[in-house]
Structures are given as structure tokens and as C-alpha cells.
Image 1 (cartoon, helix red, strand yellow):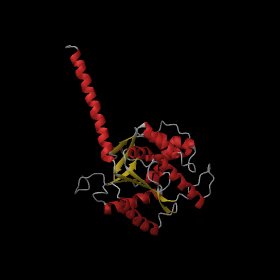
Image 2 (cartoon, helix red, strand yellow):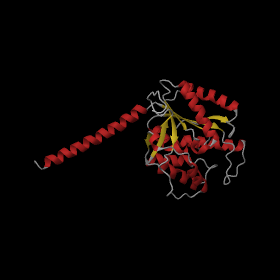
Image 3 (tube, rainbow, N blue to C red):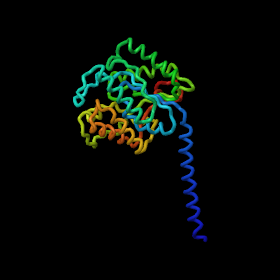
Image 4 (spheres, rainbow, N blue to C red):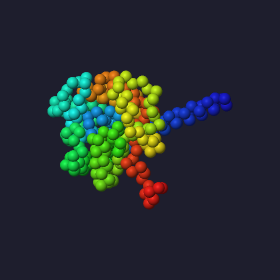
Length: 276
């Protein structure tokens, strides 16, 4: 009996730890239930890099809105051979709707600016007003967008990031609490990854990476989330051949099964010295 006692205690301890972990996960899911996440990007397909966490938080009962600022009408690709213009914009809108249905989130919100024209002053001014109206109407708790580098330097990406940040810092409140920039760690080079497509190789080579120490929001995802993200991303048939989607998901999966973000202001601590 004395020999069995340590074994029984160990079993009870492990069981207790397992139950505690399950309760912790349940509490986290319960605490996120009913919250609102808004992801704001320039083009249909920009959401690919965060698709696993859209899957993750949808399962936790989060109300998710995907905002697409431009119509994607200039995203001409050789394999699809669809001319720039209204037809391509319609097809890309259908693809975005396919993505949201696959992920089980709200239908996309289209702001319908002409692809590539966001730099015009009148567009920047009206985008400010539209983003403000979205925050007022949907009252998101957390907003996600690209950071200042625009993922790989795309002007539309950078302008969306700039305007979203401007409106957020003006309107942040008890409900509008957090703005996160998607980031890819500088320390993950992907130099040993064999890509099947030149397009994704180019994207990988031109990513505007961020030092990992700044990416303090590190959101894990599981294989189920990655798989659903892959399936959703397959909707973008006008932009990518299947091998390219495989490559893009490979990049997402390389980052430690984590999607990295940094807070827009870097810290909640107030500082009075620019060098602190």
C-alpha cells in the first residue's frame, strides 16, 4: 500500500493539472465570447496571413468583421487572364465572400475604393470618415491591420494602416481598446524553405519584417485552424494558383504556429523621454 501511495498521488496530481488546464481554456473561450474583432485590409486576399486566427476566434464566439478597402480591380494575374476593371472587382468580391463563409465569420464589408488610388487626397479624407463610421457602428474591441511597412511596402497597405491608426488614436475608448499590427519576425528568414512559385518567393524576399522583441502579441493556432485558413485562402482563385496558396500557408506555418502582432503604441506605459 505504501508503494502504491506515491503512484496514486501522482495520478491525482496529473488529473488535477489536466482539469485546471481544461478550465483555463474554457474560461478563455468564455471570456472572448461576444467580443468583436475587426480586421481592416486594403485588398481581397490580404487576410490570408491571419486566416488561422480568424478561424481560432470564430470558434471562441468572437464576432468578426473583415473590412476590404479597395475593389482589387487591378489585381491582374497571368493564370486567370481576367482584365482589370469591373469584372475582376466582381470576381474578387465573390472570392472574399467565399472566404468569410468558409471561415464562418460575417460577410465582408466592402468600401469599394478603386485599387491603387488610395493615395489621392480626397480618398484619404473620405476613408478617414468611413473608418470612423465603422468603429461607431460595429464597436470593435480589437482592430487588426498591417503595420507601417504595409506587409511588403504596398502603397495601399500603408495608407490603410496610416488612416486606421489615425482614426483609432482619435476615437479609442473603453470599447475600442486595441489596435494590432500584423508582423512577421525578422528572425524567421525562411531561407531553407523551398517555394514552388516565384510569386511567393518574391513575397517572402520582400516582407517588411519586424524584430521579434516588438511583436509582443503572439497568438497560437492549431492544425485545424491552419487547415481551415488554407481552405478559405483557396477561394482566391483569380490571384493564386493552388501551389501558390500552399506556399503562402507554408510561410504562415513557419512562424512557430503563431501569428505575431505588435500594439500600435508599443506599450501601455506612459513615458516622458523619447529614449526611455
